[in-house]
Amino acid sequence: MPFNVPKCQVLPLPDNQASFQIDGRERVRWHFDTKYPRPFFYPFIGPSGDTLTRMGHPGAQNHDHHRSVWWAHAKVDGENFWADTSKARIRQKMWLAYADSDDEAIMATALGWYNAAGQELVEQVMVAALRPAPAGEVFLELQSTFTPVAKQVTFEQSNFGVLAVRMAKGIATYWGEGEINSSEGAKGEPEIFGQSAAWMDYSGAVSRRVKGKRETVTEGITYFDHEDNPSYPSHWHVREDGWMGASLSRHEPVVVKRESPLRVRYLLHAHAGPSDALIVNRVAQLFNVSPEFEVFKSKRKHRQFEVVRGGKGR
Image (cartoon, rainbow, N blue to C red; front, side, top):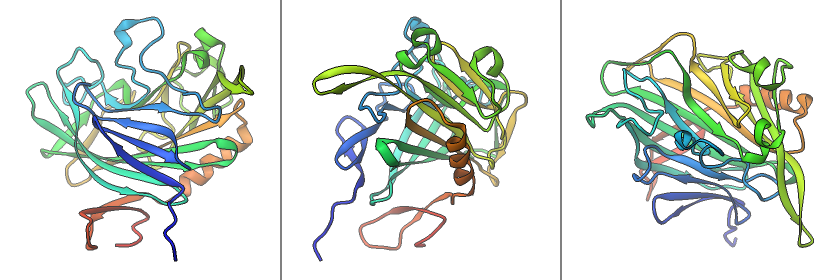
């Protein structure tokens, strides 16, 4: 039988990048070059072909650390992994596995969180999986397992961390009259900020090209918190200027011991149109019962590690 190129692929690129593609079209890219304080995903392409996220704040240079979709936290054993002014750094140590298929493209990587003195505090094993949905929509599933290098590490009380999303300017409520909606029926920053929810949606204006002309359409990202996460339903840090994040430790610290690593799971749905609560709640139900990813040393030829859902294939 002839080999069929998988529909969904992860392609390593020069300059410390990896491209997630569906049918040969890039939908998201991973950046991990050391010229940045921490890795990030950019762009995150919606159904129209435009990115739904942006690099940095539209009007404030002191928020240049807002790089599209990124992992970070403001207080880990006293170290600030959030701000660019800090000397703490998150670095990709190695990629572990790529898995291509017609269903999804999966990448597993090992990251290190290093304090200002260059000592590694935490190892983060991240799995990112991109899968197609109808009408050009996509799901980006993100799972991370945090293991202390020493006996334990503390994610201290903070609004900031661990997964953040900076929306495109036209989607932001302030800049583009976009809308923020939560699973609890709340709308807008004043109602939502600091409140708990199972999911958050940020939708607004993007442009697409039709017959050579640009037109404005509504698209957005729904950000799902998994029910197994320790903070579920998380309290949310959302802003009208275009960013959202589920807070891992908004009200109390999270202590992680080496023998019991912390695993968190999130899902980002790049969708067309405004959010539909019936559809969003169904996606949340399916996400909550979906198998976790497992990363393990491979026994097969030409592989060092493998990544699979639910431990299949060990």
